[in-house]
Image 1: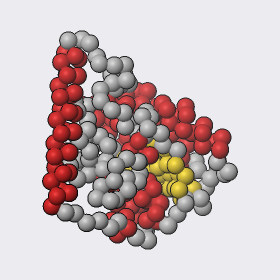
Image 2 (image 1 turned 90 degrees about the vertical axis):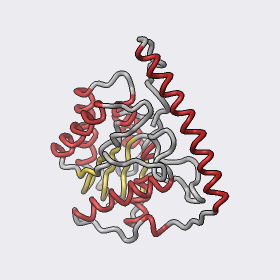
Image 3 (image 1 turned 60 degrees about the vertical axis):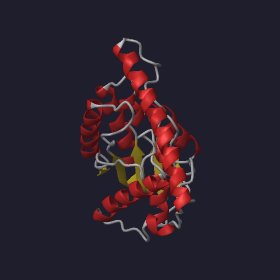
Length: 246
């Protein structure tokens, strides 16, 4: 078995600022570390489900030493950019997601996919998230994938001020939810990701963090208000959709 194979967007790719000295590693990498398995990452920042099929899977097939597997776990977390864009197409999303999950199912002993936090983004993506989550669950059932539920995933400790990207602790929290789902299916972790991190906080550091977060959150809120006004006036801010890509 070849370990963990991961596709998706920046939420799976990881990378970014330290949080109390803890590196911002993608949740799937934490899963691999906790299971003691090799990790093969192909997630790309800003990806939507079409990008997974058109770019990431071909990159894997073209470069992997054993593209037919078998892998222990295949991970596919995508949809944040799909629901936050203005070109949301639930029918196409479902067809592409099923294709991606089926590709993994053919090469992996287990497949993991994740639902999308309902509170994602500013402005919020709204009802599209509920539609996408229903699609994710249907596609998972059709392909035999396990589902990690992130619908209620929110909060300053685990999400950055954009309400999209997980913090370093947020990635650890997602990984531990994923490991709980894998454990229920018979694959036990050797260690919890939270046991692999060490950090200390200080009063000054917490104050600095509070001020930084407040400043960034104010910028995100102001941009969200501007986007809402543009959309109401019939002038979307950009073809790519609102906010930063995941």
